[in-house]
Image (cartoon, rainbow over all chains, first blue to last red; front, top):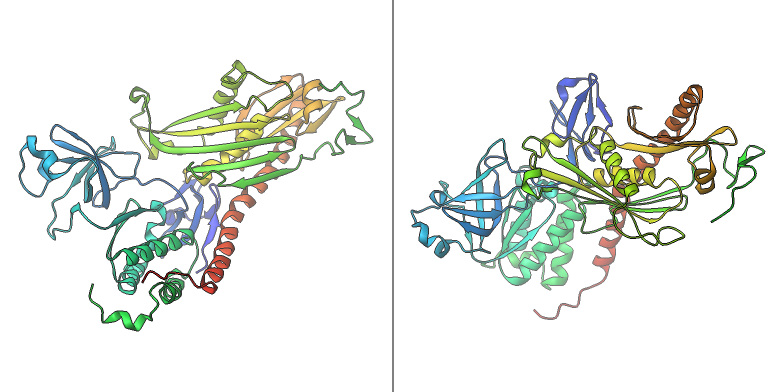
Length: 236
Length: 258
């Protein structure tokens, strides 16, 4: 369905039961609270904002940068108005307080998860998880886009990110906070960044995955000087 | 400074040729500033205004943080070159007052409760002033807030009404503002709820109610322009990107390093 651009205050529905995110209820009708695209779901009408800051929520996976080490906590910039706190006990293994900077230094990037957010917006992070996916990022590159555009980089049930990974042949991780970690050879990272920038510029338009396919095809012809079939056999 | 004209209205037309219920021309550009979270450049008659919004962001000093909501901060400032005679830069009694009333015009419409401990900072810079800078600044700030993705109950629109030659006129120009009998800036939502109303000069009760009605028609017109500007921003970018795409595809890149 064509998504309509709405502005704050626009009337979306007269049925207050359908009020979803980015909307509010006033005088028995649902209205848009943010400037964005109206999204009519099965049960709810929501508005997907076109801009905005990342507000942490429990179990979000985010990419952070250590900015400060305090007694028993690492303070982590998570591209949000609120700082993240990574407690020493949330490091995957037991470490002594004196040795905190041996494991994570100021400036280190980490792939981390929001463990809890309380009412005063104290954000607790963790590096402990079952799959051992959370870790310090020691290679690759990180690009940042607007957190509101991040869902388009992932695509419907991960279709876009799967396309990017397989077509470009690089490893990617998209944090909920709008930071994207990309790893692979330098030229593949360059191409992946171009693709991400393309999504960012066109995040409000429909049919992105199809156009991305065409975009990558054209880019790869000029960039790698070989066709897409040649690449499948290559090991990375 | 120009002299007081003998008549403000001749044959139903004002000094600049407008009818009594006509606005000056408005030009709106959204997203002008790259570093701001939301921005707007607005021209309204001779006014040239830049508005920028930053936030929600961490509020310093910490003791001013509110634990349950965000704090709206508004700064109205006139550039020293914005008027005929250079004005001293920095806050003045007038600009502090305008900042305060403008902030209060936004507080009822912004959903501050979603962002505890933060501030939403609005900056309005008047680059060129020509009567009605506070209303122009509020209109620009309203759009910059929307552009920044700040949740709001709705946009606010602002327009002034005044009285010259004993007649009510919409959207005062400089001479009417300086020598008129009354000047009344009004800020309201699309639903007609008033968030700011000031008056200087004299109106009778009956005139006041008529003026309010006139202001409402002005605000409605402004709102329609604001709405068009917001919708245009994304439809334009979309077509621009598609053109780029073709150009990029057509031009082979000279990457010989492989």
